[in-house]
Image (tube, rainbow, N blue to C red):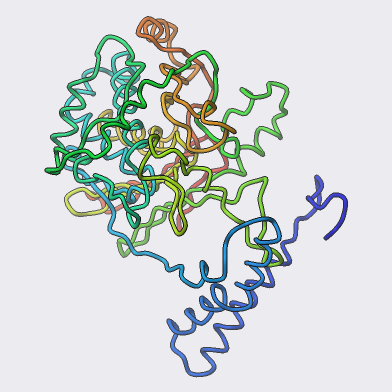
Length: 443
């Protein structure tokens, strides 16, 4: 501490001694409780209390205040983990589950509801018509996400019943322009589909904000950037790999008893703030709040509230049994990538490995959730689309005539990891893409 350069140097072994001490304290507390005759659950809660209410919490708060942060001892003491019911929809007999609207996950459910109104298979994988249809659906889902999603435990209450209504999806799908990109795509009005009147109709006029498509940007935050050469073509292979490896992570796991999990953790990327001498990194997700309620009345910053995050693990069941566990890194591109991965399997019959590696596209016609220093930096970029360099020139030219601004990349997805459950043979298929340091393990 106190050195001119405190960050690790290249080649140095990075030791998190402060974090080690914190973990040791938790282990010691659990062991002491067990030795005193407490059961396993009570022992874990004793360690929990030391972290959120004891000496670890004291140092956590001290370190935060030292750096100008606002977290208090009561904030930590009053925090409780929440066990939530996931949201879900059905697509061609497959039940797809996502986390609630404090994540962007429900937009994938909205997209599937809309896409049921189209014959995607007949369009052909990555044809101009297919890409255009998905792009337009994603635009409308992102517009709804950007305006209606927020913490469900804080008022106002998000209109999720309406947003996930099949009837609402059918209405939204019917408004898609089949010939060209709709540059002013905005949020719809889901309230009538849950028997209510929209109290924010005056805010929907935000669609009148001028939108500029001339400045290229990426919808993927820098810490998840899979094509860093776009920012600096002089980056070495080692620097490129470093960018791939230090981003969001996903974990998909299953056992022979039928238990499956899908996890997408992230939030302490570089540059990071550490809470004093605890070794615990603080999340940067607060930047996903808005300050102007006309942009999103459900996601305005306030005490005790969760920002709407991009993290979005996924599970799917078929006939009541596990079918898919899948996840990806990549900020605002996550549900774009996962939607296309899911359709690769369900509509185009790809294996789970083929589906993880298949070229896809990303829209930039959305409000960025992360990065930038002003509202202008985050505004939607109408028609901006990133496609694979493997896409045929004919398809690219056709998309340009439909109002798209094309950028090509070697990789158009973050690392996708997935497990597919083969009910016929009682086996599992693992899939890990070639877009980063992702892999599968079986034992």
